Length: 191
Image (tube, rainbow, N blue to C red):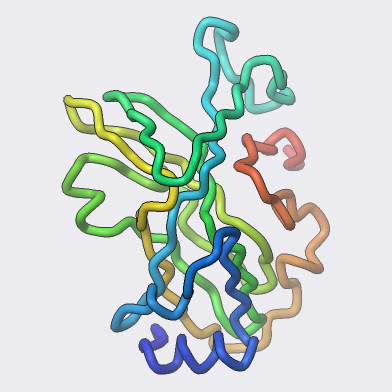
């Protein structure tokens, strides 16, 4: 069952859903009928195309092949057609053990041709901190994005039974307590 606005508000107020902005704004103004909007922080990463021939999923990504970019609040970043960036939410989130969250893009952003998560839109019980967004422009024209803009929304759903192996306790949880966007850590998977 998806949580309503009143339940999202109640669970944030009592600290059950942890939600904190890295900048000073009122999170409660981001609550919609059955979701909570999130914003873009000012830090993102891009892959340097000229520095690599392939990203091998069984090898660590060379840090020299990724560039971290920081822009100021309200500053513009132009996402060109076909470009891919790893951006991060302005909000730190903590998911309680009886919920999961889904990271979805806002319709207004989708209508610009921007996808905010390629595939990874699911947040497990026990996950804590910022969410890395895998963003692509599928439009034929560049789209300007701004640090601090509302870009997507979290929808919260209840888990039916007790979760035993929560993200924070699970061996091999690769992205716990990330602050800046993190490149893939698939190399840590067991093949």
